[in-house]
Amino acid sequence: MATPTITIDHVSFNYVTYTKQSGLRGSWHDLFHRQKSTVAAVQDVSLTVAPGEVLGLLGANGAGKTTLIKLMTGILPASAGQVRLLDDQHPFQKKPAFLQRIGVMLSQKSQLAWDLPPLDTLVLLREIYHIPHDRFDHWLAFLTEQLAVTEQLHEPVRKLSLGQRIKFELICALIHTPEILFLDEPTIGIDVSSQANIYRFLQQLNHDTQMTIILTSHNTKDIEALAQRVAVINHGQKIFDGTPNGLISRYASAATLEVVTDEPLETLPAHVTRVDETHYRVDATALATVPLDPAHILQVHRHNGSLDDILTQLFSEEAPK
Amino acid sequence: MKYWQTYQNAVTTTFAYRGNLVLHLLTVGLNILMACFMWLAVYRFSGSDNIAGIGANQMIVYLIVVNVLALIFSANPIFTLSSLIRSGNLSVMLLRPINYFRQSFWTYLGQATPYLVVYGLAIGLVSPIFHQGWVYVLGSLLLLGVTYGMYFLLISLISLTSFWLIQVWPLRPVLSALFLLLGGQAFPLQILPHAWQWLTLNPFALAGNQLTLLLLGKLSQSQLWLATGTAVGWLLLAAVLLKIVWRRGIRSFEGVGG
View 1 (cartoon, rainbow over the protein chains, first blue to last red):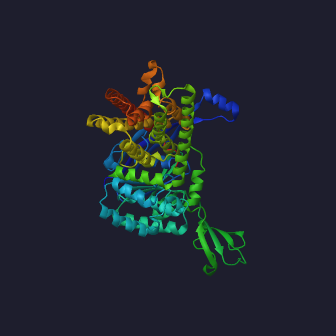
View 2: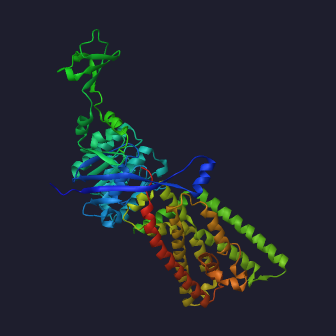
View 3: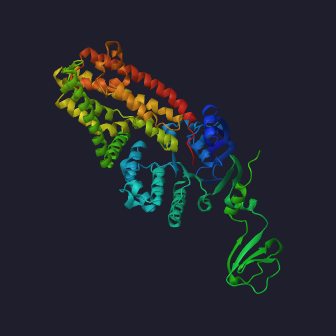
């Protein structure tokens, strides 16, 4: 087995926060006696990622997935445990040779200079990463063409649409051809056609260059389209590590099929219950085949068998005491 | 080259909002006019044409130059870093193989370039510096460079409070007041009693008062070397403290939010 590109060994991260009491009296009290509390954002997480792998990190808001990315990229120091990326054992030191090998796109933290065209930021990145001019020109032309933003290269960033800005953020993260690409919410707020464009591009990139991709998203479509493996983080702890299908089969409840037909059924077969006029629920545990005429089936899917359903169920569970 | 590109982007950004730049210059112009009228009134009512060795016409030139210097020695890095920390955008800077302060310095220089050009032209065209021999000219350039670096490090050091303070905007009036009073923006510090003349060597005075006197040709060779030596001292102190406080601050940075 190849040496892992990323090894996270029993890593924890805690930070101190302050609670504020409400009202004037509370504010007066807080002025002299602030209430501190320690939050365990990541607790004893271990994980390895192989070269060329696409790993999806799933978790609710505040679950700790972005913190985990910040630990891997060296933005935050681990409170306990070890993070090792490539051959660097101390990402927090942020050595230039290490930073040269990773690309990070934090969708809510922009690399782009707001008042200047994206090209100016990209030229700055060319100098920062010491990219030869001809390679830069060639690679930039390829990236902008693939993501359909060539015409926007010279427009001030403040005049771009959200989708175009996100695509340029992605280009900024890729301009120095990193070995590991971290994507935090790469498709947030962008339309389905742009999403599909990004999925196709990232799949191709991973296939052609064997770039390792770590991806976090609330959009399960991102994970389904890209991730070969998923790790689910809940309340700072890793609760699942495996393939997307493995996650579904592990957490899906009893096999119940949801069927939508093009017209109401005159008689209900055994083990079939009506949800509304053309929507039925079939207890598949008791049957070998679907007891409905296939010519009239518009849609069939397993109840509680989608990533969305499973994650909703997982994320609503209470934090372990 | 990477810092040169940073510098170019800062200059371009400064000119991106032309209206703001013009309004800012107009506001500064009004402030200078008010200060000039006030001082002319002081001269008229005192019945003297010389206050602390400075004539009325020289006072007007002093006020113009010191206000241009106040534009060059801005406190922008404080608010830039504060905004980066509060928004969590500092993460983006930390992930680049670049020294944050070097990049910040070139941005600082880029933002001040239009005013540096004005100051440079004033030195070249009207200042008597070039009539005082090449040693004095070299000493003047050294004082300019060291003071610029010292002031940037001092402001950067103050900017690190952003790691612990949620809002740093209350610092803006404090720093303006410090430059106004200790920097000699409101009045030349030379009018203070002799016992208070040591104030002319505080960092704000080096940036405002002393560089204005330099342009006016009112710094003797010995005063020039004293100012340069003091600026080097402040620069070293600020550099050491900056390194220590940055290390502590960066560990307390949480990279706020997603």
